[in-house]
Length: 304
Length: 305
Image (tube, one colour):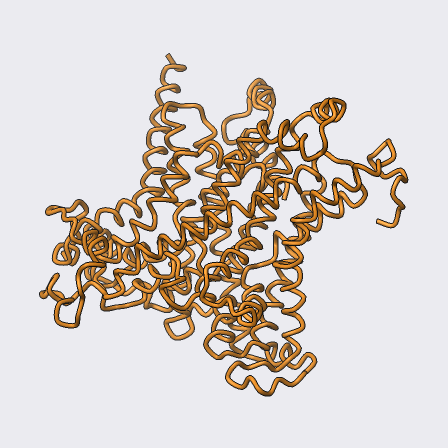
């Protein structure tokens, strides 16, 4: 009887705790999504409509049709003359900026893997002089704050004439992603048996062949984690992009979204739609690959 | 590493083969090149720049001033008030992150139906870009139509809509709240690892000895979590000290200077006043503090490696 009661109590407690957990984690996002489907008139209701009563796609339409529609001083208030909130003429930059973010993130992922995989393999599986030194070196670079890199990067990039180009972002994002990737891969390679290395060497494989044919296939889960981290870091990065990009040609998604957020005249319903678009790709990736991310974060953080 | 190749090295029982040494060097070379070029060199160069009075508003004259930039920074009242605000922001954020992450980790460490769904949802705040996180909270805190006002009003906690971010007494705490919401999931994941490492026999033995839930929590769980707590604390402290994005999106250092933290100070100095010399000096001081913390972290964790 008492066991039954305590079991019931435990289930009730877990239920309440789970509910609180979900409210804390999801409520702010739910509100962002809900208000992105509200018109400017509805969004200004007091008290707010938690669930849109007249759901509308006009905010998203404004983003997706921005290319075709000419927004002038006269037309921009047409969306909602009552409140004066309007769609900015920069709305058309959002989709291209997401394209930019995607290109940068993809390039960083590829370069990152090319650099990190061999290094992590060498540090995990080869005995050489300077091994622990190179691990400490890599660990040290991991803690350099990005804000300390801003000034020197800016001066270099300025000198190289790469200001306002996507390549400047790709180069600088390597600095903030490579150490973490090496770290995840290193701890994963370390967990794979050394005997594989010896066996492959006896069969006449070179180091590179051993890595590519034996270890790489086994390391697939950590590779997935590295790809995801690198992609998300690049997709979300703001500070460096703010410094090194100046025109829509190179501006990434966070820059365009931030420019909406800092403009008081833009309607919040539109800003929220832009926010939802910015949030969907990374959140979808994270939730889909939750297992890999958690194991990657665990491996990458526990040791460094 | 002063030993010559082939000599016996600490953990290695066999001499290092020449092939191993050279193949390791080749495999490491790309990473070394990238890290030297995009991390080490910039940091050293940044120190060099911090010794010059470099202003982009006056590019033709760049005098070498030794440590004058540092002296200038250290004498600046705004610098010290930013240090104070950064400290305050860090203390508030890190303590809240630890508390919330502990609660979430304790929940997710239990076995129950729906746990997998909860752990997937935990990644939602983690994955959201800081910029989107910033505009989301800006909208929630909005003084005219925000959800916070709406909620508190409907619950009768306030009788009229209030100014939140614009109130300099509340700004820092509200920004910290947005930061905590996004950072807590990572801390939770790290704490779950700590919880999982506690052997179940310990609890069983304590139960046999008649320890109740609270005693088990305070005498087994919390002490065993110490290393994970240290890790979270130091990592999140580093993140909080250097945090920039939310300050840019939510307040731009305002109202007045209520959220003028160190990272924002670096930004204003370099990219608004275009004083790259003092900006570098400031960034360098920040990097130094972070390095000391990181050193502490690596040493504290080194005992477990």
